[in-house]
Length: 283
Length: 291
Image 1: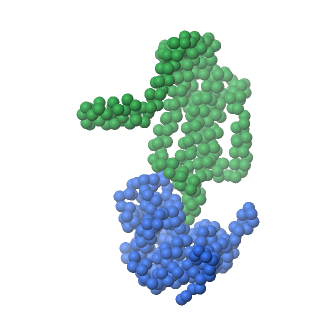
Image 2 (image 1 turned 90 degrees about the vertical axis):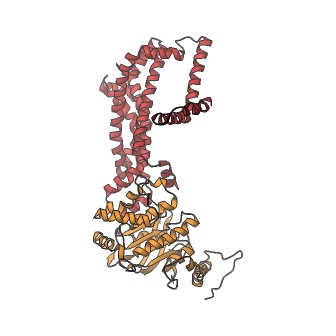
Image 3 (image 1 turned 45 degrees about the vertical axis):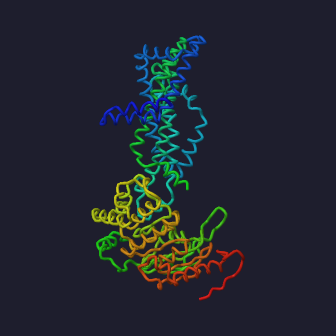
């Protein structure tokens, strides 16, 4: 990798202090993501070269440079629609979390709820939620509500399942310890089960963010008047393939940003090493 | 259960506890335990009775799966016995008894708490006061366990032996008169284990609480205990109770070279050979114990 061999010499000439700190940060970035970056740039270049050399029509597969042009030229309109999508995703995700986590707690603590609601929930996963969209439109009309509901439905299940798994994974010794200390039911939950389940809960939240974007876009496909999904339908209808790709890029950026936001919060909350915790749980 | 007053008295006296024996007698009276499993009832413990006096260090020694852990669970009130009863002092145990320290084979540290905060967990949950006193004691215990400077570390930064030391400090922080230890060093390597035995004796000699120590390691049991309860295979019953008062305290490396030390080890080996728990050699042969 020429990238890594070239960099140290260059950085040695920079005087110590703040800039040295920055160079370390850059070095780390290159060491960790350098290969991914090289690969990504390589794929884009190959794509560009192929489309130009083979003269692929622009309505079939536009070159990356053309997509970039579309992204810049239509950025005002796309960003305007992106706000709608972002709003649906965030509200849907928050509602899914606000219902999902308490429900998971109820499932873990009540055999009755586990046998009824949880069983029903697992069975309901056989229904493709996307196929519910026309029904929701019929019930809630064309506003944001049906999109938010689809988003909520999409992220709800992974949050519930992962929270249930996390809260039930407390080692028996830890519960014995809690009881032998005379901990109350609430203390056992708040000081033992919940923190022990946090890594799994965050796993569920991360899966939910990507599903939330899917939910919002599907809702906009079916009955959108706003949002990136709606815009994509319009552009596709007019065979503006470059714009469709540009919207795809905006959507991915949105998904990645949300995923990383949850990842950042997770790093803040979980300072211990959950992999070691998991190993010992499985011993 | 008047845990708070009891622990407070103990705490104030920490510095000059010396050899003073405190706490109450634990009596196990005709206890049996039968587990209901999918494949029918499983007898874990046959009818058993014994007593442990305050300040005594008693080991329960037996093969794997002989119901040793069940004993601790029954004594601490975490699981009920099928027949018979357990008494601590005059109190019949029918719910978890909280004035004791519990050390498990796995350290069961809270990964999200610092070392000091892990040690302080019992104080926090039992709402013991004043906190400053207990904090001082926690620091003192960690120092004795060779963990000074690690107070703010997270458990994932420590080795297995250090983690188990933290969990022992946690069990001792409220200065309970009873300490229950369930194969606490079973997951550690042999060298760490020997060091842990010495560390445990050192810490114990300062508090002199009653210790009920579960192990399947013969020399560990002989080295640590005042008495050893030798148990059979499942269903567990007492084969013999050995008195080790001829091994003087404080114990150290010289203890292991005493003739009496080896005599006890051999005696226990012979019990296990006679029971068929150990084969006793390459060929099947019955050993006759010479006293």
